[in-house]
Length: 464
Figure 1 (tube, rainbow, N blue to C red):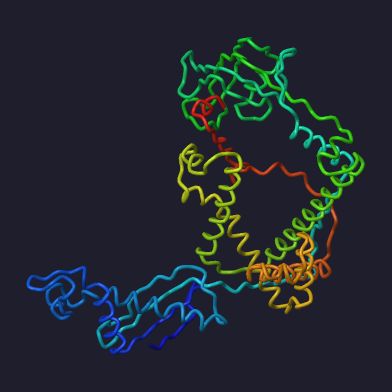
Figure 2 (figure 1 turned 120 degrees about the vertical axis):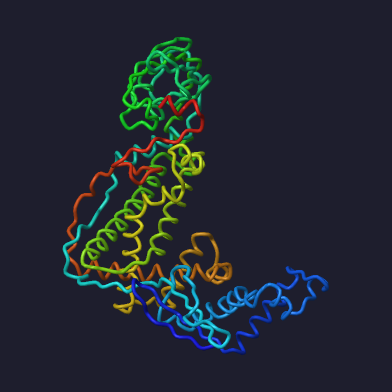
C-alpha cells in the first residue's frame, strides 16, 4: 500500500490509499473467510461454499464492502501515526472510492477535518482589562451565614406566619378564566419560599399565611411562559397552608467553630477568609486570562472545522447535564419539558463553543511560537506539591499517577508561563470586576430567551 496525504479546503486533509492487486485479492479472501457462514447455496453446507461459487450466485462484488472496510481500518490509523507531526485529525473522515475502481486499481480516499492553523496579527502591546477581586469582612460574614443556614436544624413553626426561606407544605388549585388547568394543582407540596420555583407573586402570596389558613393568590403568567394557552393570562391559586418548617441556626460560638474543624471563632473566620481569598485570586486570574485571549482573538482568524465546534458543544451540554443532575433533574426530562431534543438544544452553545475552540487554538499557537516549555524540575515540583496535599511522598504519589495527569501538569505549567508572559508584555489596566448576573444553569440563552425551569412534578409545571 502506498498513500498520499494532501491538505484540502476548509481545514481538511485528503488521504489517498492505493492498493496493489495482490493486496486487494488478499483483502477479498479475508472478507470471504470472515463472512462465508452468512450465505447458503443449495448443494453446499452453510459456511463451506467456495468463494467463486458465492460470487457467481450473489455477484462478483459480494465481499467488496467488507474488504474495503478491512483495508481502511487496517491502514488509516497507521497513516495518522506516521503523519502526526504534519497534521492532527479532529473528527471522523468521509470515505469514498477513487475514480476508475477495478480489481487492478483500488484507491480509498479519506477526507478528514484537521486542527487548523490560526493567524494572529498581534498579541503584545495591547490594552487589556485586568480583573482583581477582593475579599471584605462582609464577604466573610456572608459565607459564615450561608454555612449556618446550610447546617441549620429544621423545626416546625406554629407560633408565627410564613416568612421567606420557610418551607411551606401546601395544597393548591390553580384556575384561569374560572377553569382549572392541567398540572395546576397539587396536594402536600413542599415549597421553599423565596426560591423562585413558582411564577412571580405566588411565593410572595404565601408569605404571611398561618398554618391551616386558605388564601386566594392572584398572579399573572409571564408573557414568555412555556404554555401558550397561559401566556400573559391572569390566574387565581387557592392555597392552603398545611405545615410550616423553619430553620434554627446554630450559634456562632466555639462549639460551632469546632464542629467545622477550628479551635475558635476567630480561627474559623481566618480559615474562611483564606479560602475566599484563594477563590478570589483564582477567579481574578481566570477572568483576566479570558480577557487577554479575547483581546488577542480580535485580530486572530482560523478556519475551524465543524467537528471541533461540535465536540465543544458536547462538552457544554455534558456540563449542563451534570449541573442539572446536582439539582436532581435529568437532562432528558428537562429537554422534554421545554419541547426540544439534545441535538437541537446543543445548537444554543454554538457561538460559545466556537469561541472556546478559537481561544484554545490561540493558546496552543502562542506556546509553540514562543517555544514555552516545562522542565523536569518544574514538573517534579508540581508533583511534590500535589503529593504533599494528600500526605504522600512524591515518589510514592508519582507511582499512582496516570500518564495523563503528568501531561496535564506539563500543559498547566506551559499555560501559566504563557499568561505570565502576556501580562508582562501587554498594558494591563486594573479595574474593579463587573457585577455579573448569576449564570443560568439550564439555558445558555437565558438573557435573550428565558427558559422555563424544569420541574420534577407535573403539578409544578403550571404553578410556576
